[in-house]
Image 1 (cartoon, rainbow, N blue to C red):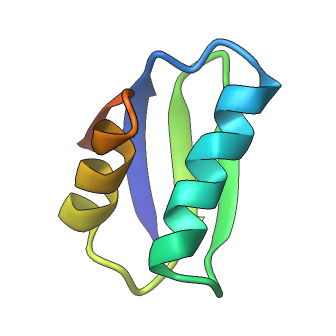
Image 2: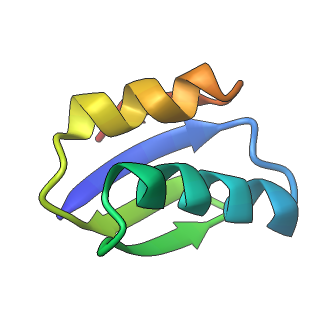
Image 3: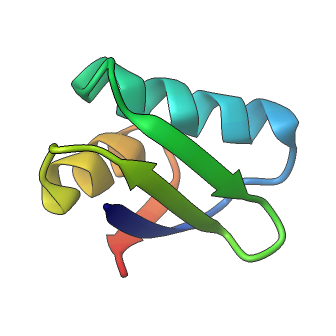
Length: 65
């Protein structure tokens, strides 16, 4: 499981965007987003650094937890 701390998500649309970004990297990923805490959990085999980079490239601040 990969856990990311993501800043800049303010609504359900942001959460859906982050989920979509992660699924582009791993279509089989199971993603859970908690807007209040900015925590994103993904059951995936993808590397946390690659996911954080992809989410950051979309305009959010993401770091592996």
